[in-house]
Length: 225
Image (tube, rainbow, N blue to C red; front, top):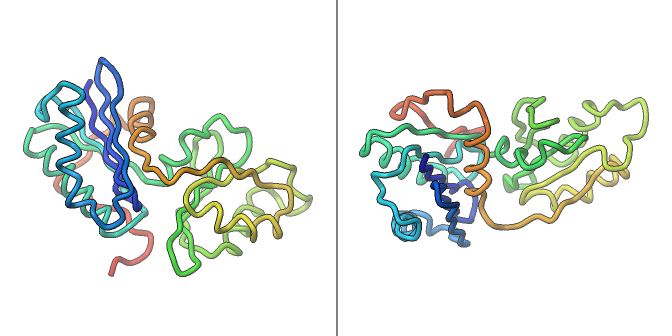
């Protein structure tokens, strides 16, 4: 199966294609240039993979949360190609995708996205399974969510929770004070997550689901303005 995955949820433009011959990916710090770069980047990557757009069997993108404008651009491009070629389309919640590489981590996984104005998008995961709603919260509120899950009757064990994402560094100081010794800060890259999205789609039961291409829309935790 040939799969095209696009991540425009953040400042990076990230595109990945998986074919029988391998995985091909492209990442760049697009900031506000997603719409200008996206289709040309897709064409270049399709050429590198030695296939045509119509050879793609499944189109996937990040559902959100994330940049309102970036999500709209990603949805418009992926849904447009899926409809044009009569192929299925899938959207994956951004935080679910971020937690996926840490599914084997024995503790709590906490992906964190910078939502600006000292607020963050986040959720709690264990063994790849989401335990909570999606949050739009402050660092202090996030600490409360983590503490409630870990249990407040005793200090959390070292390494009991792992934070990742572009907001990890911004909340780390606060969480380290409120939950001392509980957090592991992994190496956080600014690059996008199209390659991870490809992995998520291929190994999860989401492939068995059918999404209404015309009706599907981004996930906005905070009201879009």
